[in-house]
Amino acid sequence: MTVHDEKSSAGLSETTGPSEDRAKQPGDTALMPNEPSTKPAARRGAPKKYGAEFVFRSAATAAGGIIVAAIGLIALFLLIQAWPSVMANKANFFTSSEFNTTNADNLRFGIRDLFMVTVLSSLFALAIAVPIGVGIALFLTQYSPKVLSRPLSTIVDLLAAVPSIVFGLWGFLVLAPKLEPVQHFLNKNLNWFFLFADGDVTIAGGGTIFTAGIVLAAMILPIITSVSREVFGLTPRSHVEAAQALGATKWEVVRLTVLPYGRSGVIAGSMLGLGRALGETIAVLIVLRTSATAGHWSLFDGGYTFASKIASAASEFSSKLPTGAYIAAGFVLFALTFVVNALARLAAGGKVNG
Image (spheres, rainbow, N blue to C red):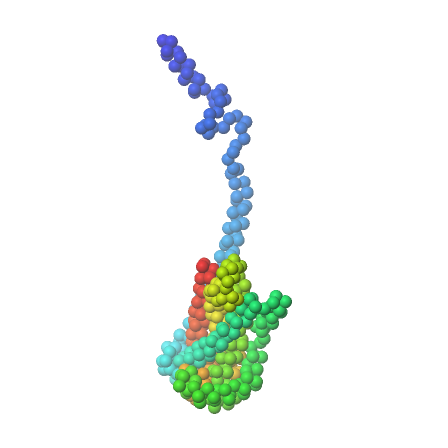
């Protein structure tokens, strides 16, 4: 072996020896003896932590699933109970104005008038309640001193605690007689407008859709006001101060910052109020009277809503087929209310996502 080979062998021996015989180089990843590990522990608490998270996530998912399942089961129950009566119906369910279930062998029922009265009274209530509710919310959040805004907000919220039957008695005994001359005046002077034409203003006591809509407006006013107030109160202070810095007046600040920011909240509150109005029963049953001229898109009609019609015939639910006719009407009301509340949720989600 030559001297060169001996030196090469010596060099190989030096580089391949134990790691402890040489200094650790900057790029080395091997650990020196007795050197503490810089890697995190192998998730010592992980099984317990992730187990609790899994249990909570599963419980929350199950709770949400129960609600969805309950809604689905309610819809399925209504559909199953109503289907035999719909199949035995001798009239068109969607276009007929007749609702006669006295003879189980000759069922003739339709939802046209029920749908018209329900939708018209609810939309009329919404047209009254939304401007007033938004105005109250703006006053409480933008104009009222704080010493007044809190007690006034409490009073408005307490209005939602008034029972439906109290609203109904107030509407029937106090409001309807006072509104009867107003209805005659509108029918005489504004009968060119379809909402004030036709109808039957001679209904005893003034129990028309016009009166019922005003009662419903008073009932849904707290919902719209509360939601609008909360949304307006969340307007970013920086937006308001920026508008003020540009020389905007108080109304311009409200118009340019508060109202645009709270638009989706107002829509959501309005849809929630509409859902309440669509399903209201006792107050409408007390106020609204039947009319021979029902069926027009007039505020001076009488008649029944879906809810009041079902409630008025509750004592007749002794036979399967006649009962199924009312369950079919209830299914339509269920679907209508579900759609309205879904739209409210979409509007609120648009605000959150925006």
